[in-house]
Image (tube, rainbow, N blue to C red; front, top):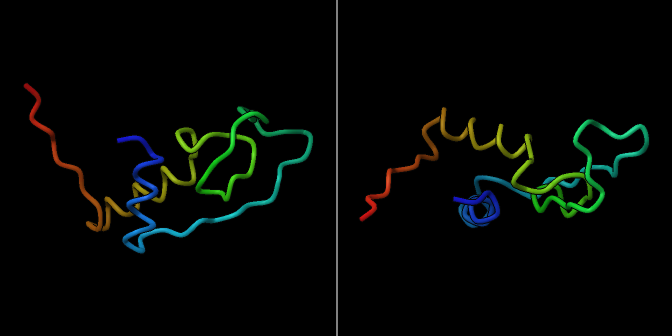
Length: 76
């Protein structure tokens, strides 16, 4: 499941909120990409939602707490 889809689910189920962050200034952090924006961080440039470590940590916390789980999908 793409993180963009997962974020929509988390927002709809009140498990996350958009968490705006300040715009990075030079020197930029490693992996910074000014052409990418993160929906979880309110569209701030620097990374895509698929590379958002903050959201990935949030998802892991929800999994560890038992609030979120994924089931294997049977494929033909």
